[in-house]
Image 1 (cartoon, each protein chain N blue to C red):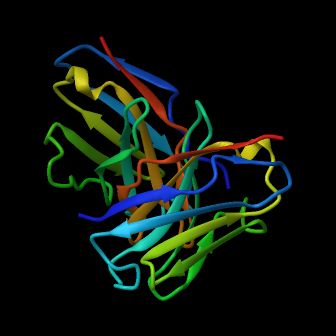
Image 2 (image 1 turned 180 degrees about the vertical axis):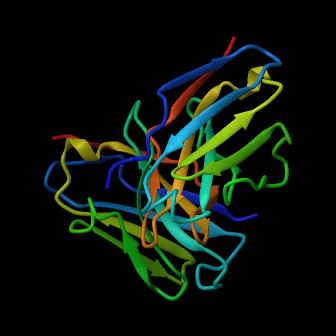
Length: 119
Length: 109
């Protein structure tokens, strides 16, 4: 069973870049079994898919966020990361890292981390 | 790309059945048999209960079932239990992307 743990700042200032890391245990991010996703949930609202990176480094992003998002792999640390630039209050959310059995079955979720955008 | 359409709320009595719908388009639900459903209790991460329209992962009770007709997918929970009270989200593959429904809050009466 893959386990995932998000980490990163809980508070980001408007216009800055949000950076989160997901540490993976129980499988290798370069192993080929999964796509590695980020999903977010604003307080009291629904889920929004942000994007994924495959074991080989191919990425796909939500078109509504594509201009501001980057997802990367660090195989040496068995981690993957999210960067979201030029944030506003609308980016305040719980951010989850999630494994996907492609296509589109999200099988394992991290516990989530709340990121608040505020000055 | 708009979210898939789910009713904001649904309810059913203990032991009864309830069906939650998820309506998309010919570009998502109507085009692919890759619809999944997620259960989320307050303050917890979501958990998948149905994948590929109608398959149940191990450990999910058989009273959870899924189906699809045209552009609409459905999740049916029979023999409702108190622990089924939660938010439910559908998700569809769209070729390149993935898209969630807006979520349905299920109340067990």
